[in-house]
Amino acid sequence: MPRYAVFGLSLASDIEFPELTPAAEYGAPAAFRLRAPACPSSRNRWVLEIPRENGAPWLSVGRAGDAMLLRFHGVADFHFAHGGLDVEARPAPGASIDDVRWHFLDHVLPRALAASGRTVLHASAVETDRGALVFVGESGSGKSTLAASFCAAGARLLSDDGVLIDTEMRVVPAYPVHRLWPAALPVLGSASVLDSKEKQRRAPSASAWRTSSVPLFRVFVLAPHIPGREWIERASGAEAMLALVRQAYRLDPTDRDRAGAEFRFLGQLSAAFPALILAHPRTLADLQSVQIKICEFSS
Image 1 (cartoon, rainbow, N blue to C red):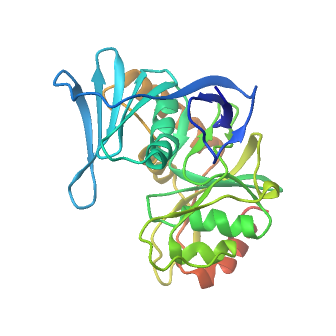
Image 2: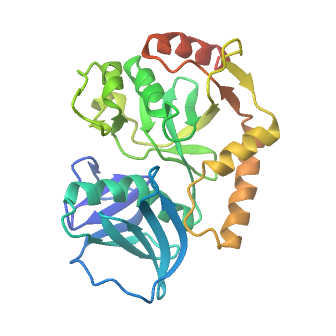
C-alpha cells in the first residue's frame, strides 16, 4: 500500500490520498482501509452525539465491542481500536469516496490522535521566522482565512484546521491544504466560487508548505470583534486555559485518564506560552492590518 506523511505519521492506505505527500518512511505507523458497508448493529454503545446546526445528526461516537466507532451520518462509519491509528471506513450508501477521505483527514484522524495520547487543537498554524503562530478558535472564527493570508505574505502552512503540538512544544505539520469559504479565496489569489456553499480546498505551493515540526512561538485565541476594543490583548490564565480545553479534539468524554493527561499538558502549554486574545474585524480588507498587529506582538 502507498504511504503518506500526515500529522507526523506514516499513513498506509488502500486508496489514494492526492492531498498528502508520499512518504515511505516518515513517522509512527498508521493505516486507512476502505471496507464494504456493514449492516447497522444494535449492540453499539453510544457515548456522544454532536448534531448539525439545524439539529440533524452529524456525528455519533460509540463503542462497537473493543473498537471505537465514529459515525458521520450520511458519510461513513470509522472503526479503530481505542488508542490505535489503524482505521477502517465503511461508507454510507451513496457517499462519495472524496467525502469519506476528507472526513477521515479532517475529523477522524485528529480524534484518533487525541485518543492515542497526543494533543490536537481546533486551530490553524503557520511558520514564521520566529516559529509557529497558532490561531485557536471556533468554526467560522476566521482561522483558515488568517492562516492563508500569512501564507500569501510568505509564511508556510503547518495546518489549516487541526494543530498537533508535541511534548517538546513543537507544532507538527498536518497536511498541505487550505480550506476556505468561497468569499475568502481571493486571499490566495483564486477567484471566488459564487455558486458554492461549501468550503473550497486549495493546495499551497511547495515553498508555502512545511514538512517538519516547528517550535511553537505564539498562541492567539480568536474572539468576536467588539468596536472600540483593542484587537489584541493578553489573555488571563483562566481565559487561555478555558479556550484551549474547549478547542482540544477529544474522542471519548468518559475517558477520565485521558482527560486528566490532556488537562495537565494544556496547563503546561498555557503557562509556557501565554495566549493572546485576537478580536479583529473579520473582513478581507482588514487582513493586512491584522497581520501587522500580530507581527508587532510576535517580534
